[in-house]
Amino acid sequence: MRRLREFAARTPAERERYVDLLRAVAICAVVLGHWLIVAFDHDPAGRPRGHSALEDLVAARPATWLFQVMPVFFLVGGYANAASLDAHRRRGGDPTGWLLDRSGRLLRPTTVLLLTLAGAALVARLLGAEPSLVRTVIWYATIPLWFLAAYLLVVLSTPVTYALHRRFGLAVPALLVVLVALGDVGRLLGPAPLAYGNYLFGWLVLHQLGFAWRTGSLPMRARVAVPVLLVGLAALLLLTLVGPYPTSMINIPRARPQNMSPPSLALLALATTQLGLIMLLRDPAERWLRRRRPWLVVVGANSVVLTIFLWHLTAVILLVGALGAVGLLPGPRVGTTAWWLGRIPWVILLSVVLAGLVAIFGRIELRAARRPARTAGGRADRLAARLARSPAGLPLTVAGYAAAGLGLFLNSATPRTGNHPLGLPGVALLSYLGGAALLRLLRAAPA
Image (cartoon, rainbow, N blue to C red; front, side, top):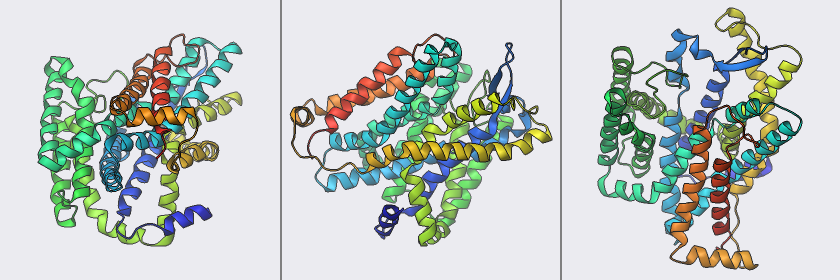
């Protein structure tokens, strides 16, 4: 706590504290949304089985507009990445060094999660657990990693996309919106592969707007806020209530089309609405964050924000196991008064479990954020220095990002059932670990 107070006290006066608040709020909203929509019934064998409550709660699907805040995370990610890259360049650094520094903060906590889950899966298999059940549990715990796969790709593209922003400004996200629209035409009318690019283009739209916020080309003023909010809301209502898009901004099994996989025009309309609200609240939020206690809470949340996100579904698994062991699952039928009232103790208990996980694993993220400068040391350091400073440094960095991102994507794309000894597809795990190891080797180069 003392170190946290010292860090908060050293905050530069020019820092946009609102960005940090939005990042923390976005992740907490995602966590709460996931926890609220979890429901349980019995499988054919009589065991508790999880599913999305949105499959039953059709009328509640528009409520996902409140909890689907991943667009906000990519928006503030663009702002933070632009600020970080500018600062790195002022210190004389190059894009390769920036990408390596960024990878440490993202991949160290993720590697710990994957290795812990793989070890738990192996133990479960040795104790006789059914292979398909083990895979289902690990698949559920790793659902958050689809986001990290997309974010790694966006971070990797930042040196190029930021240069494009500097040259063309808001024309870049405008072009990306057109590409998203073409992708949506493909998935609605064919050919479907046209939509594959939306997995990148949709998130890049928000990331580019974060650049624009950072450089001042996006006017984050209250007088602009209301028109942006109203245009976004009107487009959202038109696309979902009149157009072909579902009202749910969270994927529902077997529903087509989806607004998240890949990002759709409807999701961008929601993002526009959120952007207007962000503009509207910016000035009062900045004044509030100048107070010591609110800012200290925001700093503390951001210091472990990735840990919170990575482990929040593992908390669900641990609590489900405990409740199932004492016969308290599956619980009331979805949508009943008892079910809604039961969401309150459910969220409280999950918060306690997650707090324990953050206490254990949050220090990994804290250490990753405080990476000290290195001096030349052993053979590994010298090898890393030669690689990082050679012409191969940038291609190797790109390869590390690509391998790690591919591994995360392959895990998300692999069916939730199957026989995987470690609960994770072998190719996916090897690809991720290989990419993470390569980036760690390159990061070992002395500063």
